[in-house]
Image (tube, rainbow, N blue to C red; front, side, top):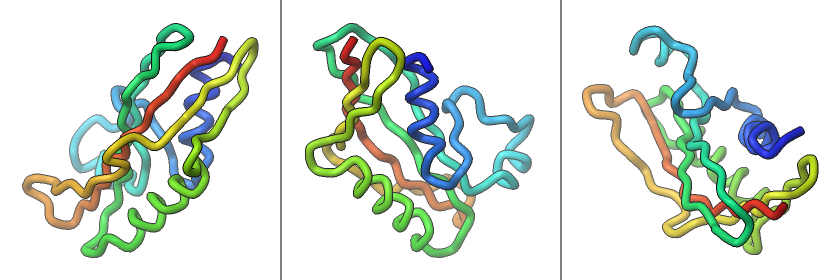
Length: 126
């Protein structure tokens, strides 16, 4: 598994479908909403010693924050205070919680969509 496959597998490991934010399989807004809940994440790579600041979003369709808040907590616990090392072919990535770690966001025009944005720091160790 290469570094991008390992990064994708990390986000896919929390029980919700996970998509690169530029690859959500939906042809229109209604189809995108029908796929909820899911996770979207930014994808980027760099060299050793150059940490990346990236985001991921937790999306759900609800009038309450319970489901996305529980998923945020699950991911936070998995990463832990010192971060989490994820191995891949010929290297590893160090995923850490960024600052601020999480932030609730409103979805303009739809008050039944709940979104929490997560800030992460990612460093590839090749």
